[in-house]
Length: 254
Image (cartoon, rainbow, N blue to C red; front, side, top):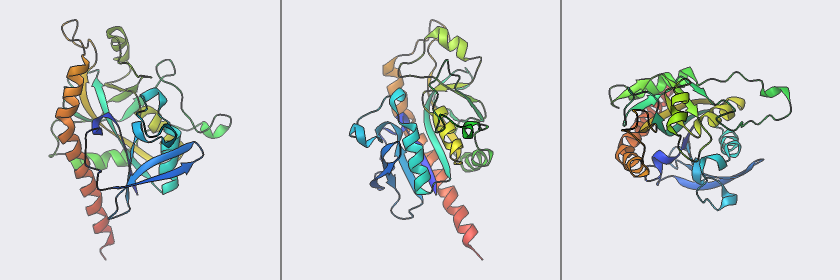
């Protein structure tokens, strides 16, 4: 079963509108999820609107219940998950509209809140990683279809909900290539529950002040870029679904 954790990139999307809305109880709270009625093999969670106890109201990045979201996926039988993320670029070569499949992530405690299922025992001593096999699947599914596509790079997670200052961006460039507010925590939680996890990132803005004083981030430009890039994000997800559907058909053939 495949899980998709989506956020800002998919706020205006109707890609999952045919999916059935359901709820599930986890030890960390109730979660809204959506499941493909045709196959029962794809689960979608909108990370900002999944908390039943918040009446599905928007949860800013620092209030997202990552443990509940990932626990829900685990209870449903999801064993591989793609985090779809809106990111800012820390690398001038990664321009707005670039799809990035990172190969590493960073969420140093000074920049991001620690999230873990294991607060008081040794099981938390996990080696974190983005799943290489899942990344290879994304590369195979998207190469030649999504342009530009960049394989590799490091995702840096900050606390949010605000964007970063130019001074912070200068520091963050030492740690990675794109910056976001959610996917590092998802990677940690998925890793702790043995769910294979990879990130599919869309560059929706250049990080604040990346190109100097002449380029400062504006909320208006960010919102416009998210809308402009939506079709590309949807096409990428559809290609991934088609890739796994074909792989399942091939595996079922005698």
